[in-house]
Length: 98
Image (cartoon, rainbow, N blue to C red; front, side):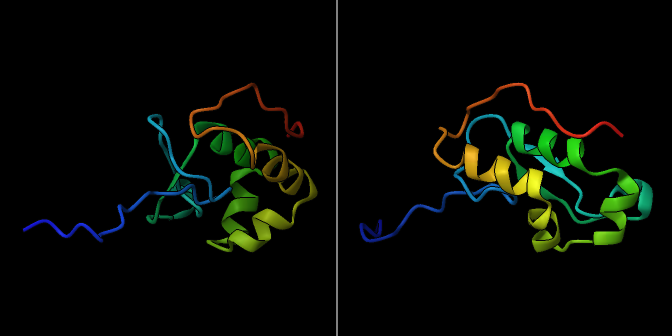
């Protein structure tokens, strides 16, 4: 018997919270090079934004603290900008130069 009241589970992006589309990447909040094992699903554009704003050393110090990532003004502006875009939206991202 199929439960007609069941709500489908929609995966969402770890960074922006939008539903994920066809293209999904895995982000290690603590980089593998820094011993991280956990990973989170993200949009490719969100993954680029994270790594465009932070070095692996910075990410390693923040750990899995998503609030710390979102507190960076450039990332916060990106998340606000991408909020209304469709799940598979992609454009070149621009971050600080490391």
